[in-house]
Image (cartoon, rainbow, N blue to C red; front, side, top):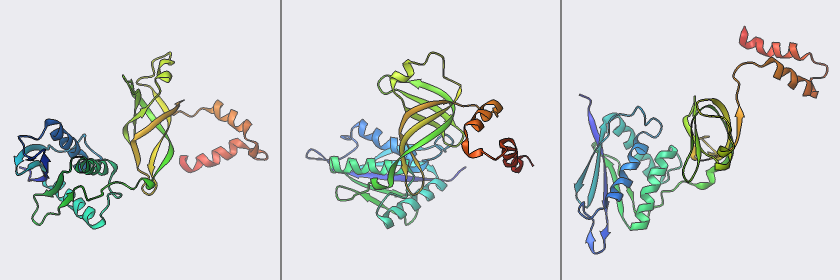
Length: 258
């Protein structure tokens, strides 16, 4: 049987004049914590992650999440690094956002969080009204992106979006004007397109904030070599004067076709 470990998130505070306990801890607060665990443990591969089980215990309120010991060892290292750096800029975006959620709750409700693991000598991360675990917004800059892949979803009741399945990033959701979707005469689903979008990108790591993406343009995407299209481009390219464009392209291709 695979060896297990656990994460413990202890939350203390007040509900009016009463100490916080599982009996006065609302289900929405439980959900708010539970929703962050995948991002803490498996920020980049939630589809193939191992099982995470959950219990809530007395002692103020203690959330216990059990999963593989390997994941717990990795998370313990993250806790130690956050304590050393006293910031979360180095984290993967989903993990950083989960920590920010706890920090926001601590400030809003005057709760104190203590996050540890089941490992002997575990690192401990304390989050409360006096800590400041937020990303440095200066390192997230506006950027323009091109995504290529198959569109699998389009629409939405309030905020419309499209989903495009890419080879490198998996499914990417892009906020899209309803007016654009209304004007589409044919079915664009399950067809391959390029999508031009804007959003936030980490200036040091290049990581894309997938929650910030907004649609700019849809592009017909042909993966096959189009000889007629390339010939039209050659005619427009003034810098090709004195150069045989066919020989030049063949020379470039030669490196790949050799």
